Length: 109
Image 1 (cartoon, rainbow, N blue to C red):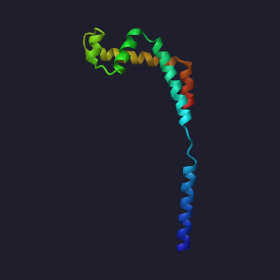
Image 2: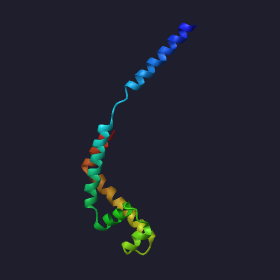
Image 3: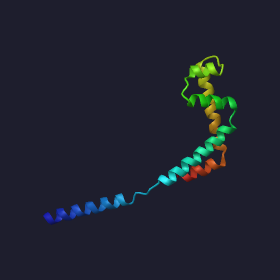
Image 4: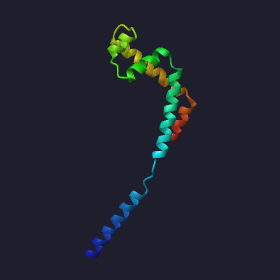
């Protein structure tokens, strides 16, 4: 009985050791893909309408919708929310049209 328990224990250790040995290091690949995505987004942001650029910049700097509405001379914070949404959608459309973005998607899979 003790021999069978010991053999079973050794088998379990062997399986566990092999499981941990097969973990690949993807940190270099992740850094490259993050750099590529940052490049794509930066290029798309430059193509964006200046008004949309300003709204997205203000939002990313932490300004509230009320402050953005006041700075952009919009009627209220609801319009600021809508403009931010439209800005983000326009940015996403430019990104999706970028051929390098499709390469990035294939690279991530």
